[in-house]
Amino acid sequence: MDKIEVQFKKIVEWAKIPEYETKHAAGCDISVAIQEETVLYPREVKSFSTGFAIKIPEGYEAQIRSRAGMARKGLVVANAPGTIDSEHTV
Image 1 (cartoon, rainbow, N blue to C red):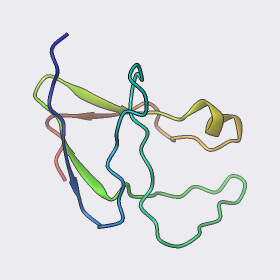
Image 2: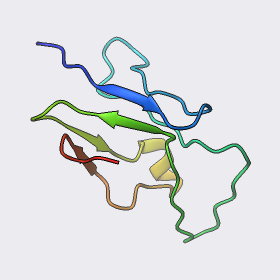
Image 3: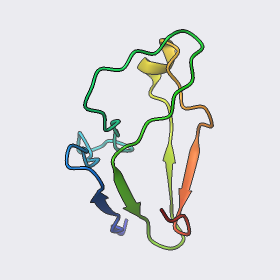
């Protein structure tokens, strides 16, 4: 399988750029870019920044999904899977 190049650019210095955690991982984990502790209350909806921008090659997409462990605790991506295509710009 050919490799594709996905480019990331930090918007804030404390952002974590996604990486594959293992050799056979299907995707990368992303983190929110916050500096202070945040509390989420039941049924509360909040929006968080990843602190980075992504450039995806034409014809490809990235998807944002809830992790199973977090979803079991009720923390989910509201529009999952969220699609980011190559035409999406910040």
